[in-house]
Image 1 (cartoon, helix red, strand yellow):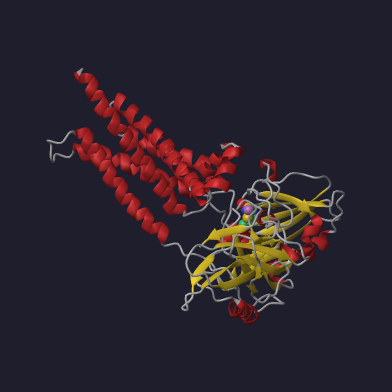
Image 2 (tube, helix red, strand yellow; image 1 turned 180 degrees about the horizontal axis):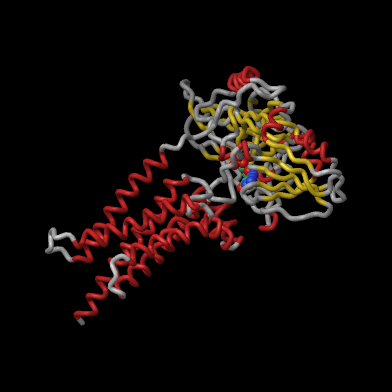
Length: 496
Ligand SMILES: Nc1nc2c(c(=O)[nH]1)N[C@H]1C(S)=C(S)[C@@H](COP(=O)(O)O)O[C@H]1N2
Ligand SMILES: [Mo]
């Protein structure tokens, strides 16, 4: 009985200590690489995504939304800590069995290095992670041997020392990782066809045309949504980036960043919307983009496709197929709101395809492959139909009261390249309708508009319903559907 309890109390501290070592490895890897693909959690998250059934991913996107992404990351962190923790636990157990105090430190360090380098391919990340994990085990081995507080159980002391070492390393790692500068530089003036003054004038125009409704985002989004297949974005240097046009072409062509920046560029507003968002969701945003018409690069290669289709590929392994003709008005964008394209949105270059769902606006783009035969893109392999034109939508995001007691409601309306003609509002659940006020259009062929509607309702509830009419005169359909597979449908309504 006695030996049995001893084993239990011993086994538990070993696991706790091993998890501290695993945690330290994750922190060390983060300190060395930051939130990049070299961070050990990044490939683990990719593994989680690749092995999660499509229905679960669909549920996470359409029902859980951002929470789903957070759970994905938490699972990847837990798996990373657990995996390296298992290496540490085995090392500690072996050292104990062989009565060797150095073995756990050596094996934990070596084992962690091998695991992290195998996952990330980055020796720097592996070395920082391995040193941190090894340090926790080392401190835990050395401290209990010191002749202080001998009344404390050595196993407990070991865990306590390991925990303190973990906390110390965590603080240092956090400080190191925080020092990294967030890089989005001013775009500068070195491209023909665009200039800082012109971009500022456009941004000022959008600000001036934005409707003043409390709580309503202006025409240029203050916070642009982000959707990625990976938990951690690739970090692509402009200097090492290039784009190749391959496949069914007269001659394959490659342009690098410097060559692209030397080409004639344009600035235009464009709205993006994710096919997987909810009807009144927030994954729809607008920015001022700067870039080169995609056809200027495509034409150099001379595409001749039998299917009239193209596959775009990106540095994160993402790929999407769609009609070649969709690239006619597309932009190879390197600027966003007058600054360099941020990493989260595809630095250094992304594609912007007017009128289509967000998913074919490929970020970190590296290749345009002109196809001979139809192929299937990343999301289409998972059952989505998100390469086509966007659906018409009017959102209701702002509900406020004016000083005089009247109510004001507002939102954004979007119909891709069809444009928004009108937005109608009902305050009696759809019995009667009235036209909302619209913001003036801003330059672009694929931009949203804001709408605003003021009304009086003293006492009682008002059921506000909104619907948009696109530039072809077609009213947004009333039939309701969820996001899967080709975008949410229906009229947004809210009781106020
Ligand atoms: N390389 C790459 N491009 C991508 C994605 C991605 O995961 N990887 N996500 C797509 C999806 S689903 C959408 S909705 C838009 C979102 O663009 P944003 O993150 O800049 O808002 O990017 C698209 N381009
Ligand atoms: Mo999307």
